[in-house]
Image 1 (cartoon, rainbow, N blue to C red):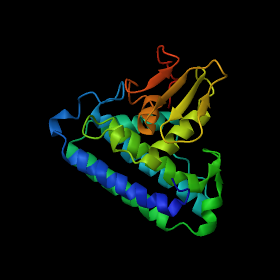
Image 2 (cartoon, rainbow, N blue to C red):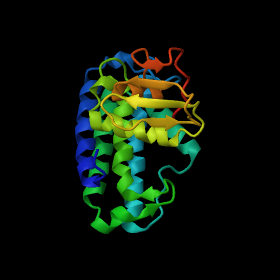
Image 3 (cartoon, rainbow, N blue to C red):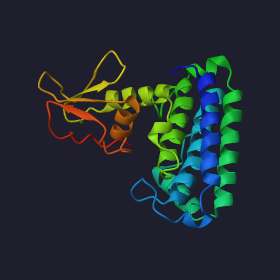
Length: 234
């Protein structure tokens, strides 16, 4: 997947449109039902997606203006914002996601080329990483709304980038070696050595498993044995 933030902004537009189509098909009475993310209802997921768009907009504003604009006022404020929005009617949730996405898209369009290179302390990366962060939130949490959208709907490029990102940050993972089908180079996790189990399967399945969005039943283990328990992600 490209690192070009302008291309990724287009991907965020597309992913948000798909998310909104799923949200519009939800039963309005179901928002208090559990999502696939433990501890969160469907309403929590939708509320989080709107507030995260505003948080990412804050980062772009910081990079563009030089004025410190944190993602959230505090960790407590982040939680409170999600909780406050979770019980709203479906129509209000959808309108909030639309409006927050438009603010994010406008902030991205307003970025001059040099602003994308500004390193943002909260993420320790340049602003060019923000569109990917937003795309990741939309695609992964879209899955949490239920079986209408699954990791199988992710693009191959998205799944591979997500897989590599999780693997690179899984410092506390049990040792294993991932072999995504069709990918030349294996991905070692933890203190992987020659004795570490090799986990094979489709890239989307491996990414979903490491992200806690799949149980790994379609993956293979060599030598034969039980799948390791991956480290908790996010």
